[in-house]
Length: 285
Image (cartoon, rainbow, N blue to C red; front, side, top):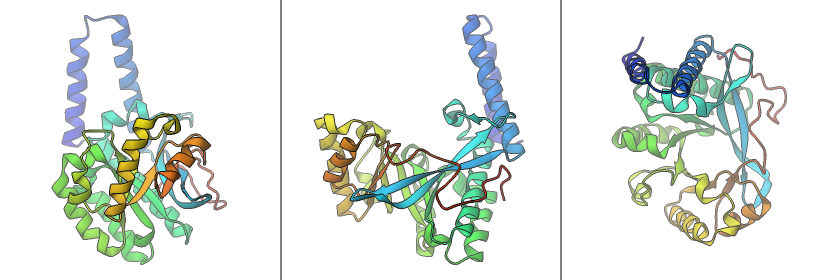
């Protein structure tokens, strides 16, 4: 068991002791959370995972997908998806989180091998940069197939990137010359600074949904999102507006200068992607 995972379990035990005298509801929530994490660990151990694919479309031509995002889905013993919100925050800085990143990368790279014209983004934590297994998976794939790197986008969330900024910068400097693109995900979800555009050489920035949802009715968010899109354009950074759910919002974001849009308006994440009978079994490569 990794040190991070051991520390996480120790914290959970301490928390359990603290609420022994608390309400039955508190105890029930703790038991539920512990059961969910146990299910996640079991699923990862048996590689019971899938990728769900969501299109990212061109704002000027929404019928045309610029690329797809591969979102990891963890299954319980009955085959149902365990909601990411129920466990992701608890595992992202642990050994379990690193193993989950490895499985997502394996699945994504397999898809890129099978679908020659596809461009695909895969989420990762900045903590996985120093994880040997994750790096070995990536290096084997891009060394075996010269076209893989140019079709792979690695997404790192803003909060994750800010935990170890120097490590992220060095990682990007190493892999961008090989053709891999990098996206800054959830931009605006934290203590955002426009300085990131100068310090980091991200290829893509994805604006957090809090600024894009119902933006057609929110003049203040129009100003903020428009400023983000304009500054990114000055740094030659491709922009993606996320969580787009209405045609009115899509038109507004297009008018503000966003390059691409992502959201349920254009398609929910699906394990049955449009490129045909793509193998998406529960066993990772």
